[in-house]
Image (cartoon, rainbow, N blue to C red; front, side):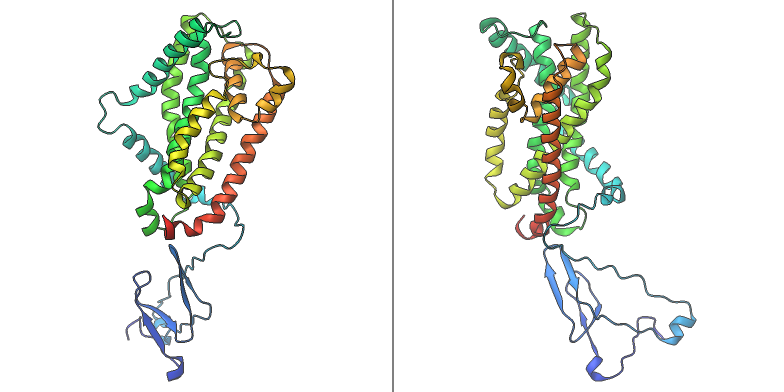
Length: 334
């Protein structure tokens, strides 16, 4: 007897064969309910199947049934899915890196050209013409130390905000944790960050700066920039699916945010009482931390570092929960 054959007790228990494209050939009772919900399909409880004795004797067992149901309300973060889908995360990162420089002449050299030319412009207009102080450092080095982490943050923000819209066809057809998409877009920027950091290292050697023991804190500030970029990217990517105005807001937001960050000027221009308020911008702590740890600029501003760390962490956690709450509708409106 065919292993797909099923026995029923009466005509009332006879099952309909449902072929809706998502689960062709699935066997449902007549009183069962099937509710499509975006990219997932909910199979109502009460699904019963019976296997013929001959199937059991032959050692045939049915494969496990996996039911994917949409969440309701505030969902759990389910961070374990990142480990379960780790190969997919690496694939998205590698794909984003390849696509970013596909059919370009200079390739990854753009990661050096962008901060180099921006540093030159800042040095001319802010360093020489405006005579902006640089905390005792050569102004080109001062500006470059702020531009390297800032450009990583800004690229992660812009690419992450548009990541879900750019992958809408994939989101509609394949099930995977949607949070992987903006997170991978941010992490892909670490390649550019590493390339741009080599320019900063050469500038440090050229100006004869010898880092002190505070260089050990540099990885923390790099991690802080990643946390800040991920938090903002999660918020903007989820909002961009629902409100396409976000794609027009992001460039303007980046311009305003850059001048609200101490890239072209030091925080020492502000009064001590205003620095903690200024540190509500998480990139203030990142930029000042990179300068202090890599260049030995000024004294450690532990209060600024603490406030920026708390704000960046709050952005990441709140962004992750908000993303999980609204992701159930991505396939419907993307």
